[in-house]
Amino acid sequence: MKFAVIVFPGSNCDLDMYHAVKDALGEEADYVFHTETSLEGYDGVLLPGGFSYGDYLRCGAIAQFSPIMEEVKRFAAEGKTVLGVCNGFQILVEAGLLPGVLHRNTGLKFMCRTVELKVENSKTRFTSDYAPGETISIPIAHGEGNYYCDDATYAMLQTNQQIAFTYVDNPNGSRGDIAGITNKAGNVLGMMPHPERAVEMLTGGTDGLKLFTSLVKQGAHHVKTTV
Image (cartoon, rainbow, N blue to C red):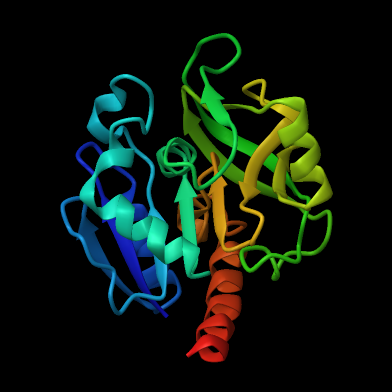
């Protein structure tokens, strides 16, 4: 697969995302800047963490209007793979590609540590290499990771099995311990924890690697069956 790593002003995890795909997996990846208007030739899009546009207004609120985001929306509508991590998750929510909103953490403090997640749905294209209910250790680094949605949306997420990951010990107050969700079609995933920072033992663990191997296996299958 060939991945586009989207770079916004203020992105700071784009290198981590590129490394996870290019070096840990051996797949193709390019940096694609926010000013671009085409994703032609790519099989997957990765929106990295950071502080796009300085997190002014709200996290991701300005980035959603970047020229590349209209193409990301088209890309997602075609059923292609889109992953947003941390600020990338915030951008996907602001752009309307995922439901809900992300608030300031309970306690109003920035958190940077490794947490445990539970794999709630191992049947998505992002989680198929994990066992159902598997517990994994993934780093977090965010100040606005408190996921919220109304009752109707939460019921929808549960009914459609869109909750991909939950926190074992909720660090930020997210509703239902939610750490990551997909869209209804299952081709867009947003999550606050950073799997790209957990792909090799040198940085403390490899529990994030299965997300990327899942993505490559399932994404490659999707590309073959839709060409």
